[in-house]
Image (tube, rainbow, N blue to C red):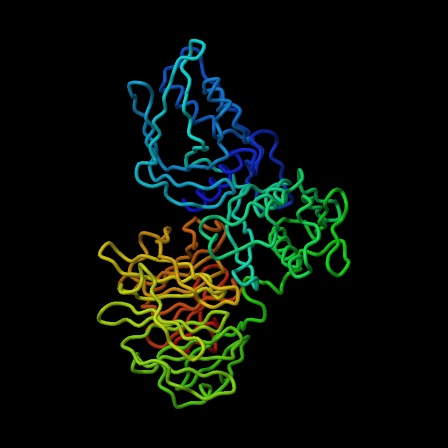
Length: 574
């Protein structure tokens, strides 16, 4: 079901209109043949309305017409009145549903959509449409003697089974609030020769509602794409932009380059980018006329120069592991003699914090200094750092969770509406410092709650936004016991039912995510923690009761972790 839904959503998006994608014409294949369905050449041209069709038949035909292949809304418009045809704007959004029921009304037809979800005009996932919004009350009137729909929804409405594997989730890249790193936003687009153009249009449209408060774009307001982005036989894409792109300061132009490079590197065969305006190349700050898609690594979403070592506890000290080698962690914590329950390491390994064996005392060390006790509490969950070297703590008290932030030598309480004062089992903060995610236990079951972290231009914390629920948790995950990162926009969520443990990969926006991502096998055993990284190339580890650590291999199997098998409290930096 997950794979079907992801491909479906992208197919729907192509049909939504001309703001980003065409409503008619051929859908071209690209050179990513290994991911194309054998039925890729199949075509389906739904019929228009029949003479004398009843209102119910007209509505059924209208819904069917939106599943055309090649994708077009031309047939769907024929079910509308002449007036509605001129005003219908299907590119406003896309709605996907699992089931539908059609019932007659005195002046039309009611369509009730089961488990309806929707996307914005760029292909960004918006989630459930809300109570009552999965119902379409369509008014039908006589037009030239035939029943036609007078009030179509400004959306493409398609069923879940509408599948074409030429479509996939991709990322747009925007800048964090300090212009230091790129923050990805997942959207759903078709594979094909038009992908470069579609990606640039979506990038210029700016971030969606879910990231609007914590990201920004380097493109000047009003920047537009002129027609399309052609890709030459040598792999160079020409990005023709409006005159707003001219005359940018060098630092801002370098951010534009980073956004384009990271976004367009997802197009197969595209290797270089040339920005033009008015048919003339736009020179880069160093005088070059084009740049490679691997440019912009200084703004990498995983944070440039972040440590890729796995840390953990071994014989009363903190050790670091990488590529078969285990060495003591930097600083005093690398020496034995500590009672350690959990640890956190900053992005550059310049700071380390640990929760003592009593579960309530937190000690911290900064490079060049000594170990200091910074907090005395009750039951402190595994701490974490962000890229600003801010240390985040959650203390499970008798009155509910206290969220705390340690920066500048001070520990300050942080009010996270929807999390503070609740029963919190685990939490993470994104390495880029934009998001706080917690597992909150409720009488209706465990929930993932996410809050944006608003900051100044310098990176100082202002406040969190009220937390909202992340959808997409599997129904059979069981009790959630821990979570970590799997990529900058995906979580690894550890659930447990009796003696069976399971890790599910969940998107921050609640969307189905990448259908080709290998899912993890069930594990026989009581896993107590999961260690993952925003760098998706690094392995995911589980700590299992009995001082055992296992690793997720490329096939989704849990295997021996080798030299780190006996490591306790494994975690990555940041």
